[in-house]
View 1 (cartoon, rainbow, N blue to C red):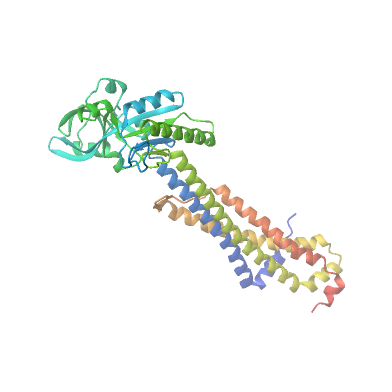
View 2: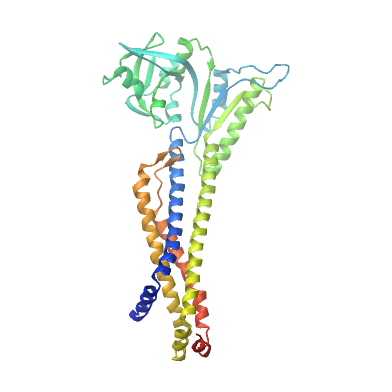
Length: 414
């Protein structure tokens, strides 16, 4: 029930000790402010990392070869391993029930592309049709490579948006001719990539065509796969780790590589990277929560100390109240009301300032792995209510002490 006299007492007490109440409120508000800002930057890190992983398929497994560093079966170290079409074909056939998207890759270094008077050097790569999904590319015009292009060694290309803009300007590129290292190709598609211009400065053609036209034989530079989706992240991670290990073992065995040679065959599993990044985010968030909560506790302890001082200052008043018949719970309620009021006002003040700051500067922050720091409003409100409960607990002990004072002892207090 609303008791106006109780509220008048609270405001009178605050008015008598403005500076003390203000400093106590600042300590509590700063606790909420720091916690919300830290949580905001934790969310910003998660946003930034998520954006980085959007550049390619989130469950991509990439395989590439290197140079041997360990002697094995009489073969000296220093051999460069060349993966072949048959390696890719064996893996895709053996794991056909597990693989969702797949592509081998043959790269033509420093491919000079020319259209009319315009020319430029770009990454030219022979790939399979699934590479569109492995790279998370979106077509803006035409089509991507298809199986017919692979089967018939078609001389067609798909351009990144930057290549199209550089060589064709405002002209429609679809159906036009493009020379790549002196060989004519027909443009059948233009794509955009979330990775930006660096990823859009590429030209894709059928891998069979690239191997034939550019004397690649049956050599491939890379392989990339994604596996069929699973019900949960942990299950997907276990299967992808097993798949990565098995294909690495297979390639080492086929190419006579020592089992302990970690340089000859390289496998990059984005799910493993994702797990490491999100484990790091979890640890950072835990640290941020710890720092914020410790700051809040410091403020709550300040509230408790202030309440103890208030109880000490009002000992005679409390004694008079009890002598006149005031019940212990009314004394406790009187102290608790003031404690909760100060904590709540300070907490919401800290919340408003922190949310306003994140709202103003958050959208303008674009650093490496930090993007648009923000906090879910429900989480922020929950922290304030937790603070209010903590303030009630902090005020309860001084209130209980006040309720335990014997009237005769309180009236003797100076």
